[in-house]
Image (cartoon, rainbow, N blue to C red; front, top):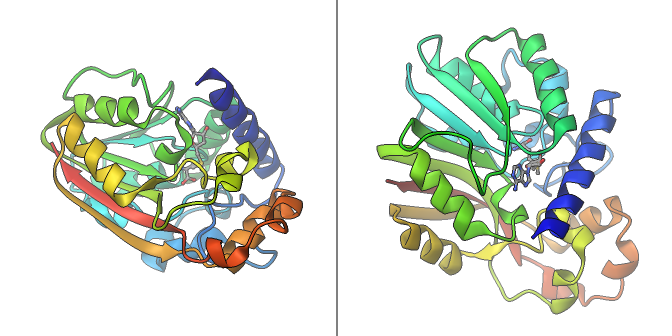
Length: 270
Ligand SMILES: C[S@@+](CC[C@H](N)C(=O)[O-])C[C@H]1O[C@@H](n2cnc3c(N)ncnc32)[C@H](O)[C@@H]1O
């Protein structure tokens, strides 16, 4: 696990530095956002982005909008797993209000620094970014109403541990409302072999059935997994090229890749 984790940390640390210097983050491949002209604002409808500083939006690296699923209420406590530059934590802060609280958890120092800067820019006081691993959440049992996450669970080799931890910190009746990449068809081995693609959120994706099995195993009920952004071969090619993996892509039969992955909404209850 340590090697993949270190690779992921290094990869996102470099992205955070680039974003801090003014570049746009490249998301996990939601349609069009990795091309030259795109922006990850495509995964959020305008009402979610209203009032957010540009820097926060540019730091977005997700694959769908988990807040649209979460039905957040004033006073609730939210934990965002793998909070990155902070977009979802900051959007959530508006919904839960001053009587609520949002924790953003991330393992990468550079991302935490970027999230702190973004929090200052947005001027909210009910968000706390904390350092740690999603596989070992530094919070007590049953303290959180809602877990959100955007394109992060696919990055860990130990998904069951991460989801068990999410279950542990949720209050009884609490909910999981996350966005993640899922695999809709069997994936060619060549892609799995590429750590570069892995850190781009794809090679670590679970099938819907496997995701459901793990969620059930750790205790979740009323599980719903809905693909919302299907990745065409063009999107996957853009992703590979963006990560300088075009040479690997060109050796693959692209018809096999068409529609293999999707950004999905995943909802479940404790
Ligand atoms: C694809 S980015 C998504 C960031 C953010 N959720 C967003 O939508 O912009 C993945 C983030 O998860 C963090 N991350 C990946 N694996 C993690 C782990 N095992 N524990 C904690 N954070 C992790 C990375 O540091 C990175 O900031």
